[in-house]
Each structure stands twice: as C-alpha cells, then as structure tokens.
Amino acid sequence: MALIDEIATMAEIDQEKHKSYLSIMVPILIEFAEDECGTSFNVLQLPAGVKLFIADSIKYKLKSKGLSSRSMGSVSYSYDTKLPEKVKDHLSPYRKLVF
Image (cartoon, rainbow, N blue to C red; front, side):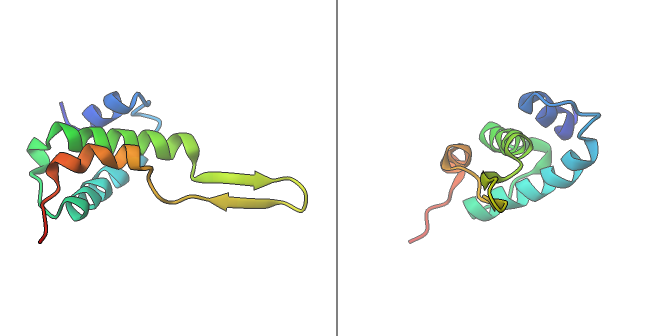
C-alpha cells in the first residue's frame, strides 16, 4: 500500500476527493516531523507514530480549516495555523535529545 493511500485510510478521508491535497501535504508533514524530531526518516519505512501524526494533522486541517473564531457583527475571522499539541504528541518518542 502506498504511503498516501495508507495516510488517507488512517485519516478516514476520501482519497480521490483530496488526492492533490494529500500529495502536497504528506511530504510537507514528513519534513515538519523531521524538523520537530531532529532526525531524518526513511519515507518507505516511516515509524507508526509519524504516520499517526501525518494522518491526524491532515484530519485536523481538513476538519477545522484553521478557523479558531469568527464574529458576525462587522465580520471578524481569526485563524489558527498551529497544530494542537495532542497531534504533535505522536512525535515524542522520535525526538532526539539535545544537550
């Protein structure tokens, strides 16, 4: 099973509908995970926690659209571009300690 297929299944999203989004976001989230952990991952053998991080990140981004609040009177929108800590917690076992 290809990585994008596996991520789509884990995130419980329609792969055909979000195919271009997945093809863009999966490599970006792998790079994000590598930066967070201070290590490089073999894309062909990603650890389970990294796959969970990617799937949860995609699910979160598609569900929330980044909107954190909005007002109707004179229209005000606020966007949250950060991932929640509970999503990033999947990367904890893979972080390298820095002294």
